[in-house]
Length: 167
Image (cartoon, rainbow, N blue to C red; front, side, top):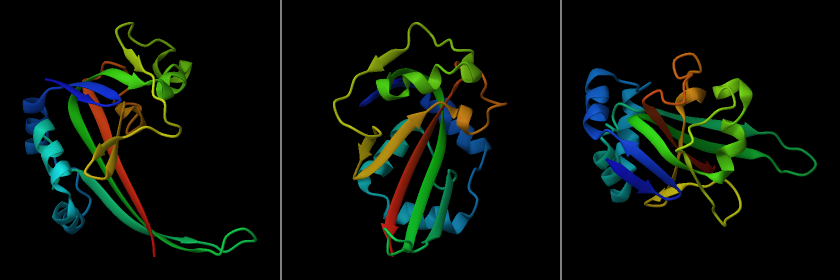
């Protein structure tokens, strides 16, 4: 099924993704996943349901980072939450932002499919898809495991959500 998650276009096999999560559990700590599922906005719940991802089985982590004081910063603490998930399918269009990264000779031999589309965006910074105030980025799962996902057409798409809050 083709999904337009601006600025990405993804071809996601929803049934295969549901099967992936019925057979695999990527959760590092069940309590963390349950806490995250409780605060998900409705838009994020709908997103996960539409693409076949089980939020109780994705890889969710929470950490508190101590920021040391220096001449420019007063220091402090930051609460960081991440949610990483896989979907079965392929990327049809990516933000132009990623062209140089994915064209690197080391990653995919410097060759990407001619059918891959590049989306030009006007905003500065890292693009994301907004799901109820939470930014989702989609990427090739090469960064998750370069050995397992070494081919461009590996059959999977990775997604990530990162939130940070000063404490």
